[in-house]
Image 1 (cartoon, one colour):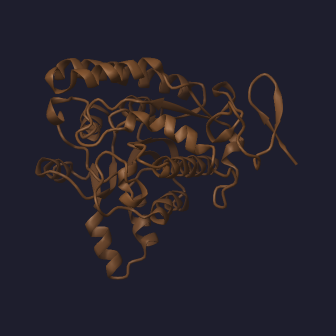
Image 2: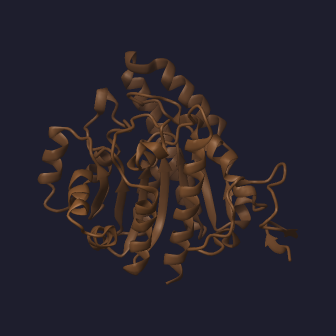
Length: 335
C-alpha cells in the first residue's frame, strides 16, 4: 500500500517503490525542508581546487542521481520516513564560486574574503537548522565548504569528535595561499575550533609538514593510514576488527566528514584529486556499521568532492553513499 508522507501543511499518498515523479525532491521524496528531519545544504563551491575541477556541479548531479536509489535499505530500513529534503541550490554560492574562480591565484586575498562569506553562510544555515531540531547535511562542493557546519555542530555538541574519511590529511596551512583551501579544512578545524579528537581514515597522500602536525598533536589527531590498514589486512586482520579500532578512538558523539576520494578511485573516477588505494564500498559501509556497533552517535555529516565525470557513475555512488550515511546516522540517534 502507498505510504502517507507528511511534507508540509497537508499529507499526500506516497509510494516509496514507485519511480520518482517530475518535480520531486532528493531521492524522489515529497518532503519540504520544513517537514523533514534531515535537510541537505548544497554548497556548489570549488574556488580552491588544486587539480581537477567539477565539484561545484556535485550537488546538482547527486540530486539527479538520487532519484534512481531504492528507498528501502536492507541495513538501515526506511530512513526516508524521517523526512529528507534538500534546500534549493543557492544562487548566491554559484555567484561567489564564479567570482572566486575568475580571480583565481592572481588575487588570493580576494578569494579568501569570498571564502569567508561562504563559511559564514554555511554556518548560519547549519546553526538555524540545528537549533530547530533538524539534522543538516552539507553536500559539497570541494572539501573546504563544511567548516561553517562543523563550527555550528561543535557549538551544539561540545566534545564531539570527527571521523574524517579522505585520501588526504587536509592539514596544510593556507595551501597555495588560500586560507580556506580544500587541502586546509582540518588544519583550520583543529587550529580554530575546540575539537578534542580528529580520527582520519584512508589517508594515503600527505606532506611532511602535515605529518609533523599529526605527530605533534598529542593524540588529538589519530590517523589510520591506508597503507597500514592494507598491511594488516594482508596479514589476515579482518576489516571489522580494524573498523572497531578506528571507531574506538572517537568520543560518543561523532561528526562524519567524508571526502569521496577516501574511496577506491574506481568508485569516484571524476573526483578532483584521486589517489590509488582507499576503501572499498563494503569497507566504507563497514565503518558505518562499526559506529553503530560501538553505540556511538552520528550527530551530523557532510559529503564533499563528488565531481560528475563522463558518466553518471560518480554521482550514483555519491547519492548511495549519502543515503547510507543518513540511514546509519538516524539509527545511531535512535539508540
